[in-house]
Length: 157
Picture 1 (cartoon, one colour):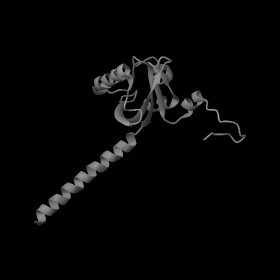
Picture 2 (tube, rainbow, N blue to C red):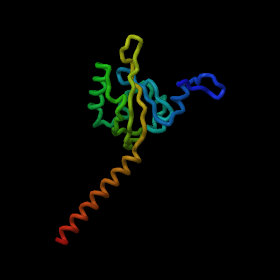
Picture 3 (cartoon, one colour):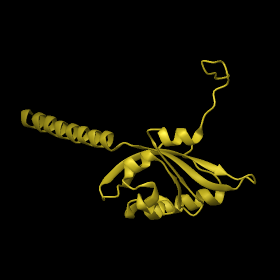
Picture 4 (tube, rainbow, N blue to C red):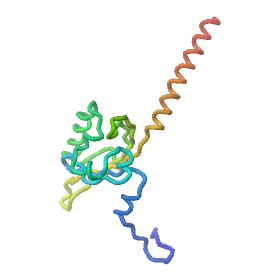
């Protein structure tokens, strides 16, 4: 289906404008894991300005305890040119500039040069900290209620 504007001409998407305006963080890193693109939503989410993030390692947003696992996967993706997170949502912890923890969810897209080699990874990231906190609270409440119900049954029996 051909998307058309109200005037009837084909719609043109300004990708730079899209990345700047989108509500999710868009982060692109090079094959070594240095940040090559950091949009306004990434600034809001992680607290680093584009000037602070550009050229830095993704380590600025990866909790220290997660870094080895992240880099093992990143290097494997660079070596094989394959990732399962192009379609599957990945949920992981992250860290804000001020040090507080975040829970993020994202997908990635491999960027390739004309020769087909991977030239970078683009991630579209959403902050799910509020949802994760709410789910954790509900799980704890359910556990407490189940324990109280078992205690009530034991006391009655």
